[in-house]
Image (cartoon, rainbow, N blue to C red; front, side, top):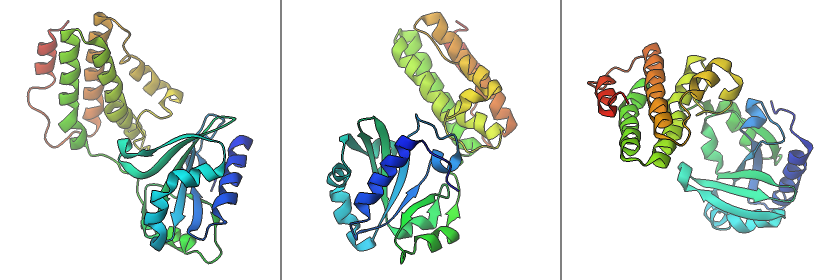
Amino acid sequence: MARAIPEMHQKMLHRIIGVLEKDDRFEAILGGGSMVQGGFDEYSDLDLIVVITSDAYDTVMAERHAIADKIGGLLGAFSGEHVGEPRLLICLFGLPLIHVDLKFIMPSDLDELVELPHIAWARTNSEVARRLVLAQIQWPQRSPQWFEDRAWIWLHYGATKALRGELFEAIGMLAFFREQVLGPLLHRSESRPQRGVRRLDVHEEARLALAKTVATYGAASVFQALKESIELYIKLRREVPPPLPTKHMPGALLDYIGHT
């Protein structure tokens, strides 16, 4: 069920529906993200899935920017290859400023989803509702071995940059490690979907643990954050151990850092 959304987002959604429903190439507009997961507020993005007839897909994909521009107030847009989703058009509209994600898919793409979206609009003869009833819904949870295979390499990279004095690079790696490893594992601890560091600020234990891994600019702070990241990862790893733990870790990495 869709959650109540702010008036600004509601008006934007109605504008988008008003434009796309006039084009026979579009079958439905679905809402995802906070619209179905909760926590929707004035700062939320508007995450929309735009369902296109299969025969028009290539044409629509080539015209995405022009289609978004027809909605009115488009300030900028780019596609989502950087997050592995080329079907996504990330848009900023205004004024007032509002972030809208438009993900263009075909009806067959609804057979496997990471969440059950809300139908914001659909044509009366659309097969969208039927497909959603039959869809396989599964959030992409990463395995313990996925984290283990990457954790020590990423942590070592951060350590090398810190030891060289490239503190900005090391700080960036620590943030990346929180997003890719620590945040998802903290969500896993509470049986939540592995959504990076999203919404962890409201969970006290997770917030306090992650805060220790945040470094300010300075060698001592960076090395302390690295050690805290190692310690937190080891703690979270114990909950569901990987089948093949990396040899010599964490001792080898701590020795490499030199217990700075």
